[in-house]
Length: 627
Image (cartoon, rainbow, N blue to C red; front, side, top):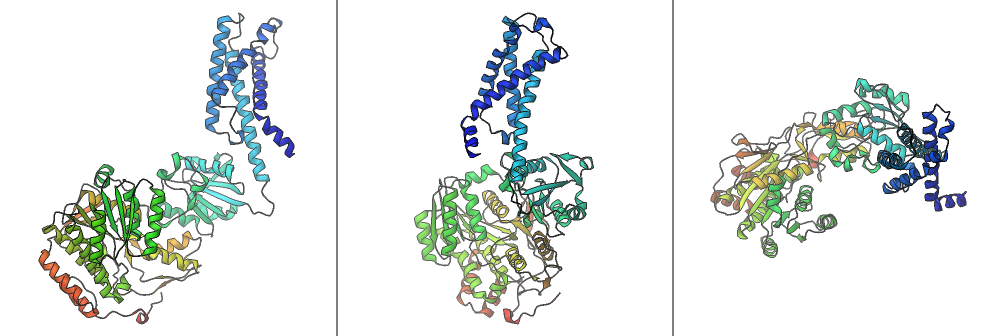
């Protein structure tokens, strides 16, 4: 058998050409038979008519060779191959017809010029599709008998669903598509490549049981977050695997490929609209400039570096205190952007001498300050470190930017700085005030960008919930009414760059965070995405509000006159700045004594709206509430 296969491969092209010649002769004869109702009169049986098949074959060989139709792998025949087949056949038929009309026998049945190419196309296409069908069937027969077939239900009987089905039939022999779900009534009962549209999405629970479905793929790249949530609620009740296709902008050339099918992420359920950036404005700010990012190894800092690298800065300086984090982001960026110069620098943002050294070596024109301590309870237990890093570090970097004539400085802030109830939030508010005051006496453009939580950042609630679900629960939520604003890390980073490009010195920009999300809903969604059911397979427990937390966050203070900018997702807060001399003196005093009580009193003196508690319980003293 192997020897026969090798011989067929060795002589494949001559055999393919010979097969086509036989088909074309058959089409030529068939056209005459059709013309004369399968009884060719004696007058039309002469050699003068029979031999004209030879120039037809020559013309067709040339056309087929020109379109590469003798080189294709028939088991992968697709629409493009059939289009080329049609073009080559019509082209060769046109040449043949011109030759016959010019020098051929007269009369010549004109209907042959129409019937012959139709037969030729049908025979050649049929041969290819037959080989493809046999190959597809053979791949399925080759599945080991002990291997369980995966029964697939596809949500969405549109173009993406059809492409997915073709991809499954071609490259996933262990998967058996058993049906489509679609909400369009006109599609119910219809079939796509032999697979039936079995009903609407709301019927998923019943149909999954009836059809023995083991996995579901959502093939609706344009689905909004609300639609994705509805689909997940319908299909994730039976512990089946649920995956999805990426949105249209991430489909390569609009095509579905096997490796693009991925797990449904929590970002899919939030469904925020893609960010529209003023690419030219951002490019003008970054291209051929030296950009320095503090906290370059963190969640926001690393994504800022990825986004900045897209605009080809002359040099990108990665400043980070943690060696491992710096190593990983530096290696990643060098691999992805080989034409950009990356300068990794280990540095503590509170070390003024080290900052001067790095600024003197690299000469940045644009500084993005993302380094900060951000975990609310941890900063409640270590308030002195929060002040030292978030306030002292910001002051040191801002002062260095001023001393070294940096053109633009942007500080990354948080919604927890608004009417703060935590030490972390209050230190970020003090940092905002300091950066805002620098606009008084510096040629550097100092701006701040404030936003809420980012999905999947280091230490955020998403990785924690996933870890708890993997252990079998319980998933711990602080309070049933706890809500937060969320956006994805890339979205936040892109909007930071957009705000930086349009920023005026002393302004605080607020990003549109959309609608707040209940944390308990987030936990339930993640449990369902894991193929489990909340409070049946994985328990949700309420543990009580942690130190410094509040049930909801605000994006602007009451005295800030927040106005819309030219970008729909960016607002600017107009608040009177604190005089630089005043805030500088207050910060200096705050940094002198970092004992817990003194720190809280000092923060309260700078930010009167701070409502932090004088005594904060330690982790051991927090009594969980069971819900």
